[in-house]
Amino acid sequence: MLTIGFIGSGNMAQAMIQGWSGNPEVQLTVYSPNSGKRVAKELGITAEDSAMAVWLKSDLVVLATPADQLAATAKMLQPAILMKPSVIVASVLGGISLAQLHQALGEQLIITRALPNVNVGVKYGYTALAFDKDTNPDIKGAVAALFLEFGRTDELAEEKFGAASAVAGSGPAFVAAFTEALKQAALKNGLTEEIAARLAEQTVAGTARHMIEAKKTPLTLANEVMTPGGSTAAGYDVLQKGNLNQLVLDTITATMAKNAEFE
Image (cartoon, rainbow, N blue to C red; front, side, top):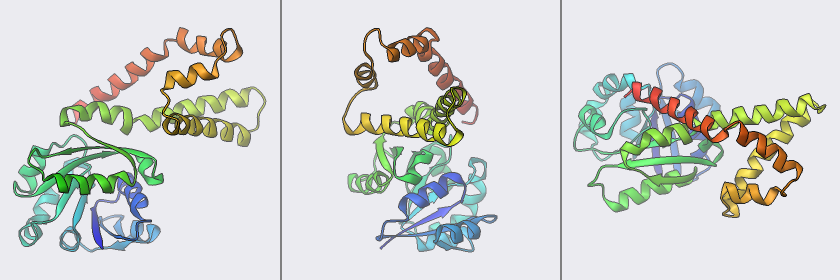
């Protein structure tokens, strides 16, 4: 039985807990001074009374506090780290590098940076992983296997995390906004709220699944749906005249610029 402990119980921690909760080989525990016990009760896992308790009971600890609490968390954990230095750390703290994590927690620890998105909670997410250069390949494989339970994962260099965060981390908000736009268009054309929502949500979800399972690029699928001179092509032309690609690029660029302010 593998024990994964969470220090922090915000939205991302909760999504990860939901993603791992169905694994019979994984035991989950959490500590957060304000919401840990409530989250543990809601999600059916164990709550601990301190960060130290989580560390000492865990094989892998997910650091999921606000980034500005790293120093305070590290200070609380130092006695536990000395007692049990074998714990693997997976940090989901935004903008905190591996070097900064080692400086705070200890150079001897095995630390991974993980960048999951909220869709890991429904096992259809994406996680970027960054490891120390000298991390044992077997440990890399074991950590990656855990995150693969959430969906897809890639090992990326840390300098690529800004782009990955903007596209995969923030991307669900942008896709949700497009889904809402589809829903609003359906409403304005006479469909009920319930049907409009279902139509938009299922179209977006089904399109993504189609591309993944059929291994089709977005443009391949778009061209399969369109007939030259047809109604879909007419709507597609409106998107292109509105410079959709540039709009999305500007969105990602603005997101990356804001992320950089926190690093």
